[in-house]
Image (tube, rainbow, N blue to C red):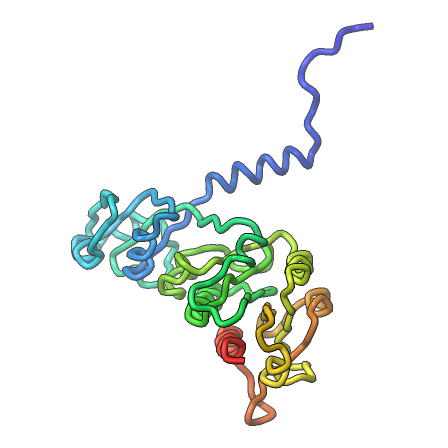
Length: 267
């Protein structure tokens, strides 16, 4: 019998996993705007690669935390940094690696500073980075432990998201999970009550929260228009609505998240 030579062929799933790991290792993000760049520079957990600034901006940034800046002329800034026509950069851009927040259980069970009760936010099909940035900002203000979203059908960490978050991205965990329904089930097993916010809800959010005093809560929101997926809705323990003064009332998803977080923190 002839001797077999060469290495055995790896299964397709192993090859795909290795490719995904290499792609993640190579991924970088450009943050822009004085506030986002300043907060990222001050974050010891953020891996920083390249700082590009105008002379005016470097003076306004203050402490560069050991980074050596590349000073560039404002007239060629857009050609120096690949921001793809994003929002006003204010002459400051920082290339970084995405933040690593840890596992779902590590993030969900980690006590947030100043929290009155354990609070999480889960987002389904919210793809606008400006909405997610605003939600991260509200989550930080109202003491949520994390904002959770699926890998697919959600906005990744981008400069636009970071700028809208106004620094909150550096402090507020934003965890993207492979499967949102499975993540929500895990949160249930950790003791969280899942409250979906939807206009079809028969329960008023303030009334519901009054019956859940002190309980750990995960507020689940879907995108405007398509809303959350049916499986996500079915996984939740309650479906509640934010009461409006009139039948035609509606809120942007980031505004709804802010209102719900405020209400949950006071209940």
